Image (cartoon, rainbow, N blue to C red):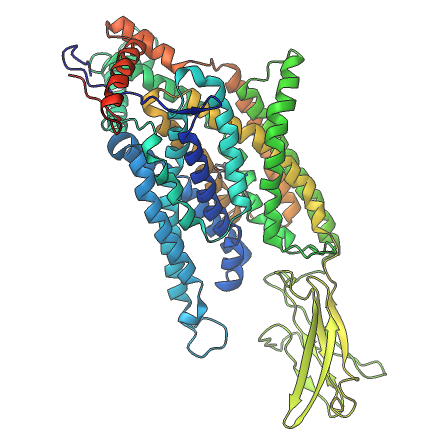
Length: 623
Ligand SMILES: N[C@@H](Cc1ccccc1)C(=O)N[C@@H](Cc1ccccc1)C(=O)O
């Protein structure tokens, strides 16, 4: 679309107040991000355990639904970017979708109150369908809220910077990342209250107007280029430099140039989901791995889901170290550690993290008893007689075992027990001293035992138990306590977090810097989509490609990521970094349009006058 010189509609940049070279409005944006991540990660950290122990789903279903949710959270950014860039603008999109988000969190919180359907007060919900439906509704609203605002916040932050603040803009993305991780670390329920901080900064923001339905224009332009290319497929037509040039007949050169820039970056993003496939298993597989380990740190007991906090803690230390020490040092050594190289190295670190997870898994497996497979049963017979007893079970006889630890048979003076054990007790249960009271009519006695993490015991209670005050109770250890310590997971967390700093912080900056001005949110959404696809891959692998051994699955993921990082490094080699503003200015010049810089300068001068007249004025319309 060409703009006639007589009818020029321009959104201007507000002159922003600065502090230490940074726009003050940035403060509200990073605090808002802190609060939002605080809420999101707080909920996400316990999600797998909620599925597993409240809704009583198995490991695979819990992992699958968890990753489906995370995938949805990173697919909805496309919707957010469309709403922001085409209709409401970034500011209003963030406000409205935050409301949807808060409603989702409340719905989710309500779904976890089992008393709602626990009519018989036995501590278990009576109507699981109700809780599942409510929690799914809550998760969909949360995904819509968190994903919708995600591409807008980073891009909105970037928009606050003026041309002369490019150094501060780069630091902004690191600080932004620090806030994400500080927020996730301190996750609690007060987030919805703190989120008003974003609105408080309202008067100070640079709010760029949405530029019409940009996504629709992009789709139409791409569609036209493809159709036109197909119509002119005969070799008699001269070739064009780029297939998008086939849209030249109908579409503005500037739009075509912008689409080319975005497509180039999106093409480069194709291998990236593999990184997230590994990264996001921290919240599922690694948390489940931690449930088979001991969290006893002496002074405190770490719960399996709390292990995830190692990631943001490491981010808070690694981002400044990388930014201030490692990257400048590499630069001083004369090495060109370009953004795409950093991302490749980040992938290799993530692969190493999975090798480390596999080694830990091998150690854990050594301590586990042989569990029966889904087609096998396991019986444990305890002989409390002082002589040898032969137990014969007819192979043809159908044996019904109702649940874990069922007592099947008693003799007059001694109880023999048969128990059925299918997996390790989870949630770090059995790690504390417990007191028991045995009652039978008027008779009772008390006893106390200390249990190890993940252990399973059978108690043998003779009929004389009340006469000797519970002294005669003996216990049999069905399963040993977890002996591999959770601290062994630290190396894998360190490696994946180092990879994240190289990959994710750089990717965030890269997506902003390589996007044309009117498509910053769109490219942020594209970047987040790589995460969604990564989670979908975990879903598929968890459902289809079940490997018999968990360590083998970890090694498979590590090898896949190494292969993908090689492909990515080849693609990165052929990528040329661009300055979108420069390309846009060049196209404008070729089209005989006024350069944006000049427009900006004229408008800034005009705005200064206008600001003096009207302090509220943010936008101007020039006709
Ligand atoms: N390091 C993560 C935050 C985290 C905190 C606690 C447990 C796990 C992770 C982080 O910084 N995430 C960023 C970047 C990101 C990551 C994955 C997908 C999209 C973006 C975030 O914005 O949440």
